[in-house]
Length: 269
Image 1 (cartoon, helix red, strand yellow):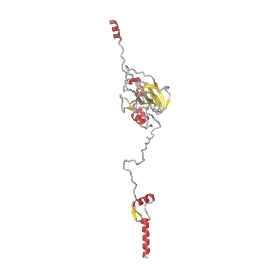
Image 2 (image 1 turned 180 degrees about the horizontal axis):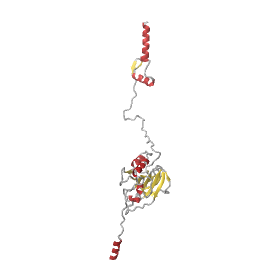
Image 3 (image 1 turned 45 degrees about the vertical axis):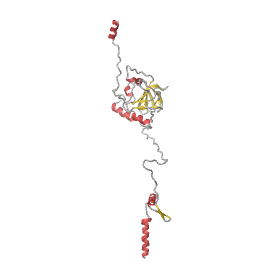
Image 4 (image 1 turned 90 degrees about the horizontal axis):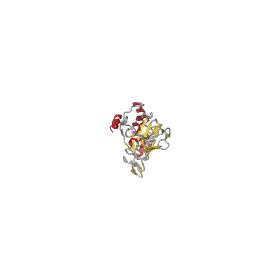
């Protein structure tokens, strides 16, 4: 009778201690790694899997570049193609535009799909007047599908066949970089401005109302869907659709000869 009770207690111990354990493969693995195994009477412990030190890439673990997320339905191109460029990330002459320095003859390309708005194939700028509407020299404007107006100025030439109303694609060549207009005494560069569409007579809007550097940086570094559309909309709401010109607005006065002085000089002679 006593031996039967001992057998019953032993069976219960098996159920509690040995026969039950962490459920599933994870529990079985944990039990195996934490307990000793016996082989031929020799007790050994499971060897843990080595882990790489912090900051060390395991052999064969080459980093994979992840593309930026798509943040707008539009695809953009940096406006200068195939050439080394530099540009300042600050207001220039008090204006929210960018001067992109690049070698003469480099391609100015459309920053986005759109339609050609204006084409000025000949520079009409004169240093004696320095009229604001003429400062960009040879220029092209593009109305993008995003609703933003883009200006590329100081060009040397305009692409053959380019005319208002022509559909263009992002990255399509529109002209060659030069130093026309009031950049005649500087190195070759692209005057790049972003604004909203307006009548060409409102030239101070066309020359740039949106700070472009954040978007230029993104397009240059591979984030090709970062759009200036909402920034443009916000700025137009802030200042109105037709803000007054406040910077570099008045051309130089033209020195006209005084008729009385001219007559007096003629009489004297």
